[in-house]
Amino acid sequence: MSPDSRELDGLADDLLTIGQVSDRTGVPRSALHYYEEIGLVGSLRTPGRQRRYPRHMIRRITLISVGRNLGIPLADIARALEPVPLDHRPSEMDWQRASQEWIRVLEQRRRTIEQLEQRLTGCIGCGCLSLEACHLLNPSDQLGDGGIGARRLEGQ
Ligand code: FES
Image (cartoon, rainbow, N blue to C red; front, side, top):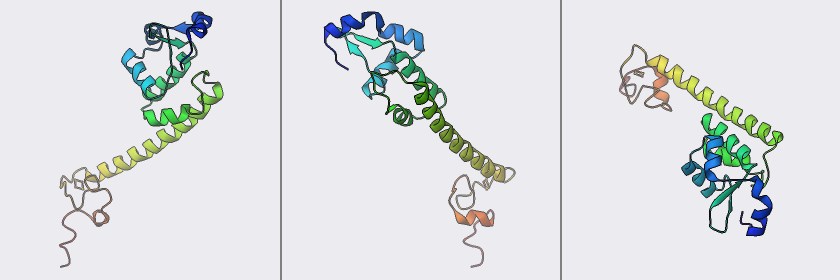
């Protein structure tokens, strides 16, 4: 976003400083700089090169914060915001689309945690920490399915 100063004059009532945006969203200035650097948010510049954020950017930043609070990677947040131009306020539909995608991410994460839990449960009372047998140390090892211990040596 790089309007000339005439555009800024026309938007003056609708522009916020980085401090105002940080106060209203709870997002530190450094994070706002970073989000802008990677194209997640945009700002305008005054003739003195100070950042000014269109008011609608608050909603975009809030959506990013929700994603971050859920542990959604920035790359996935960026993908969700891709269809929303920087000069548009994310709509309810945009939010619904993002939240549906993030629910899928969280469900996948839950399944992974459940699998890890099952593997950990299998270790309770064992303590072998065997690189060969332990599902946690060697999750894709088929030998681990046969039980604990040095499975390759058995039967030789
Ligand atoms: S400690 Fe994990 S299988 Fe023994």
